[in-house]
Amino acid sequence: MSKLTDPQKASSVEILQDLVRIDSTNESRERSNERRAEERIIAHLAGLCRRMGMSVDLHEVWPGRSNLTAHWPDQQGARSVAFQAHVDTVGVGGMTIEPFCGDVRDGKLWGRGSCDAKGSLATFLSALRIARERGGRFADKIHLIATIGEETGCQGATALMESGFRVDACVVGEPTRCELVTAHKGALWFKLIANGVASHTAMPDQGRNAIYAMGRAIGFVEQQFAPSLAERTHPLLGTPTVAVSMVSGGRAINIVAPRCEASVDCRFLPGQRYEDVARDFKRRLEAALPGDADAFELAEIEGHAAMEADPDGPLVRNLLAGCRDLTGQNDPKGVFYFADSGPFSQAGIQCVLFGPGDIAHAHKAEEFLELDQYFLAIETTLYWLDRHADRSMLA
Ligand SMILES: [Zn+2]
View 1 (tube, rainbow, N blue to C red):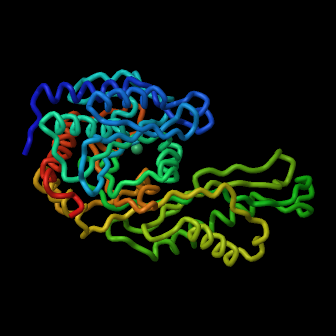
View 2 (view 1 turned 180 degrees about the horizontal axis):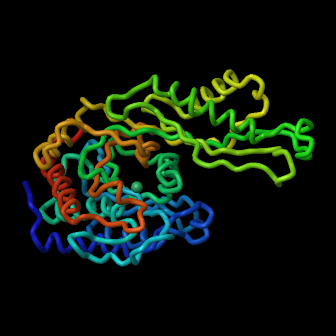
View 3 (view 1 turned 90 degrees about the vertical axis):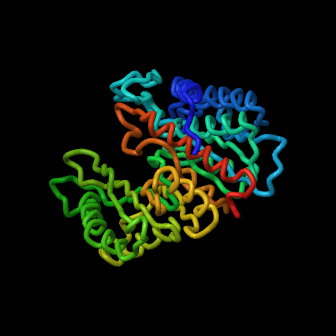
């Protein structure tokens, strides 16, 4: 196996520091469109890829917000494999360290995005650069993909798929502690709205209290819908889950509430579609609360696809063999969060998740990446590339 040299480690740290020091926070689609949130980091990446001899394409999603794809124009491979990560990060509110410092301290690199997911992006950049410097022969056509807008719901990846861009397989960079992840859950988000009738609270029987209806609906979610989800199970992901995460309603202390809203988040399994989960929720709710049936509506329905790679297919087999040699991982893993792999796999691209760092350190007041993890991820990626100089990862 190929251990990194000290100069290779130093230049890899520099690549990650440069990425962390560029603010690419993305808290809401509207604000990020105004701020052109990822423009600077994508321009920086484009320069880096071109200096590595790659040809770069920018795929604009909104003005100033473009996905980037890059490949070497002299590549011959019949099949294409991409290494991908998102460039946007969550916001920096409440952080207790300087968010864009990129400092190295205690064997860790600190700053927003160091773990989620600039560490993965820098991993792939570093590995590709080192592999190319060593002569860079790959059986597959290798692509690098950097997407925008992941943290607000994978809009960059979705737009890239809508543009028709395709590869055969993709390693999606997320902090998996350098474990190969072959399945993740999907998410269904919606607002449950209870409609009532306002009246003076001194004469509550003249109105219809939307908060009471919502109370019954929340009881249904906890006592009936959640157990119904648990009838299904997946070997790596367990059962689907549901959570009511926000509630608001009512107008004044002396008015019977005419309206109440709750945010509902369902996490479902590969093979399920968010539309079907939403329909099932509505049907069961109406059956459970026939007296309230006409009071409820589902609004702002949003779905994020689940993902599962064929555990016995060549991609998983080949990459897992590399992990086994380097880290001792024997079996594929599953994670509960969704990622850009959702829209990619829906478009027919075989995906796995892999990257340095722990998801538990993402989105935190103190975000960091352990350098040991970072170097291990680069070495693993290099190992994959070396093993597949002559034989496709998909054969
Ligand atoms: Zn991420």
